[in-house]
Image (cartoon, rainbow, N blue to C red; front, side, top):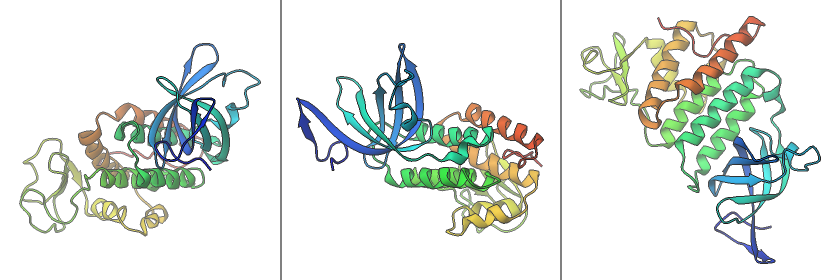
Amino acid sequence: MIGERGMAETTNHRIRLYRTEAIVLRRRDLGEADRILTLFTPKAGKLRVIAKGIRRPQSRLAGHLDLFVRTQVLLARGRELDIVTQAQLVEPFTGLRREPWRAGWAGYLADLTDRATVDEDPQPALYDLLLECLRLLAELPDPFAVVRRFEMRLLVLLGYQPELVVCPHCGKQLTPGRLAFAPDHGGILCGECVGHSAGEVPLSVGAVKALRLLLADHWQELARRPLSLALRGQITSALQAALQAHIGDIAASAAVATLLQEEGHDDGHPPSLAGTSS
């Protein structure tokens, strides 16, 4: 089998080909029948490629290159962008298409992945994280814990793990009481230091415990716990403030997914991931 880009390659009529597994993060129409795809791969990192003729009714590529699917592609090196010559669907994540809010949150995870990476920079741990979370997002009735786990682990993988045990301002052990997450300090401030930082997110003891749980191997326990909207709001606000500080504005992407979630709740689906502030 032909390996990843930059590894083993073959030459076929002077065209170098390489094969890779990928998750489709984004797509953009090009011309009358083509698309530019953003693929995230385990060993070659993020790639932007062209799928020629994919929008034609008779295209054999279309069903294998939908958004958020796991697929196997054969790529030919191009002058500017590489070209998809073959594709074989590996894992469709069919559940993501059952309700709009599932696809909405899959799009949010894809957007975070795209914003947090640069082209052709391998991030195998992030690939595995995205794969795991897409699987869970396709099946679980409430995506709150899955989305928050992705956000937390993404911060860790980028080197920005929040400090949740000691106050990053004074170094004292955190104790129950007045607490707040401070994005510019990268952690939770103790009662004595609250009010000394801009953009603080007030947190209850329950929210701090939930944030710590998201770092644990048994993080899925959070999905089985009843969480109030106020508690969800605190957890969400802290994590998104941290992401905003390190990868830029994610408000629009989160807002679209939240709106779809709230519309789904009107039909009996789980409550909003965003929650409300206390």
